[in-house]
Length: 73
Image (cartoon, rainbow, N blue to C red; front, side, top):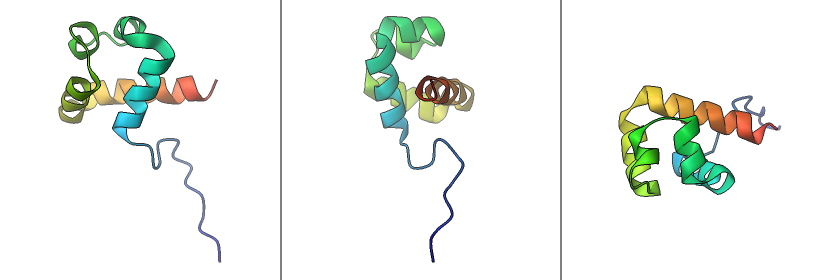
């Protein structure tokens, strides 16, 4: 018997993978322009971004939405 596939586009994707993919695609400057949060604009790093995004649901939602939009192109 086969398992049904999840329709969630974020299924199995870590937050670190999401941020890394967006940084590779847009770069920090463009990412900070598209999602205006300090962790992307002032001394950005993957580690500081992950710390902030794990504590801030509204910012994480914006990042996840941009990731879905970017990877569906």
